[in-house]
Length: 553
Image (cartoon, rainbow, N blue to C red; front, side):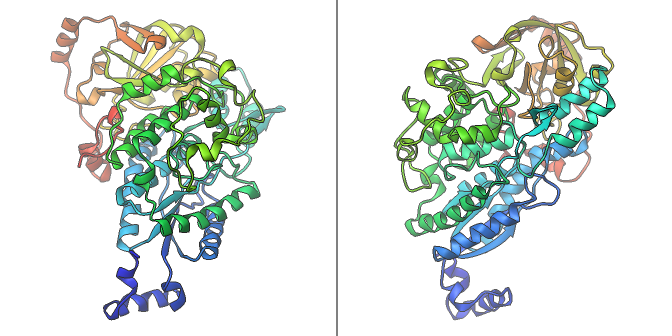
């Protein structure tokens, strides 16, 4: 056992004395030491209950013959940090999480790990660490929040942000806004639509690094506690068989994840996290691969914000396993891929039923023949950008817009709220990329403002920053290269015409190369607002969005 390094032999008597000081017995020290990395927090609604799951995981580990030990991990709530300086820390925290999990696991000689995340950057950060250190590991998420109810209709946090735009446009009054505020998020858990947290928890299933149900069992259900106990038992199987994350997260597994991503219509942020996960597995994902898979993968689900269905309904319909079962009909899934269940993908899904073909559509009745995400390329995004195509109105998928250029999110939001953005405009937000932000702020506020003001079918938005999984409309993000790195998006000017063609994966500004070169010579060098702290270090090391915004080694 790895833990023998700190438990066995005369030379390790001092370490054993410290274990005894922590309350461990001699009998416990003879068993595999399993780290339970819990991101429990009283700040994040998706994480307030993770202590209960950690206790359930402990029970499962004890039952299966291991010795569990709970250690902490940090987390940032993207909803709470939205629209202010705090959002600069969100994406950057993914790297801190990966580094801290690596530190605790290696320093304390864990024989295996159960990772208990739930929200946006915590999930990929933990998975990245598991692949980096490559000891037996399994993910046990906290599960999604139940949908809220406002005026008899199910709702979520995305509608809450949109309600602000509606209020600013005098479409609702303060009383209605208060009603939304108090009823949109009724339980603990990750926000109830197919936003980033739930996207990544579902994709952990598709990767095979979590048990079936990880992405969809609602947080308040007793089934989630049972799931945690089973996860605790299963980690011991992985330890006993020495099955490691890199045995599971292969190229085929990553292709399975991208396929499920397209079928579900996952958050655009998943296209940042999957390349970062691949990198830790010693693999590389090209954005063109995403489009290749999208071209042959039907979009089977329209969960919020793309539609009016929520995670609890996906769970009732059969969850991720039922979606994967549908995809096997077109031979789109690598069925023989190994998973943490000890079984192949096909063995996991072959007997699963789709209980609601309206929530999970069949192949023949899909929402579209292509996937929920599209990666666009052109003269202002030479290395690509991304849009959640399934959440874009038909009339905006092929469109020509007039550029309205803003340096930063705050100026753009101000213009939107002041009614200065009109139909056929495209809001261009610069210097919000991984390096320029730094940290690639998530811009749910401007997209929600446009939606709330009923402009989401008339106005597009493009940025080198990123969007929330809750964003809808023609919201095009992750433009690479970014403005701060000399990308052409930084050379756009008010009035430039921009052609968008999501069906052919194209975005093009009607500006000549000669004109771009003239503007480049006039461009002032980018000056960051960051003067110190770890964000400055992050800014120096971070790569572009098309590479997953990983840190240079």
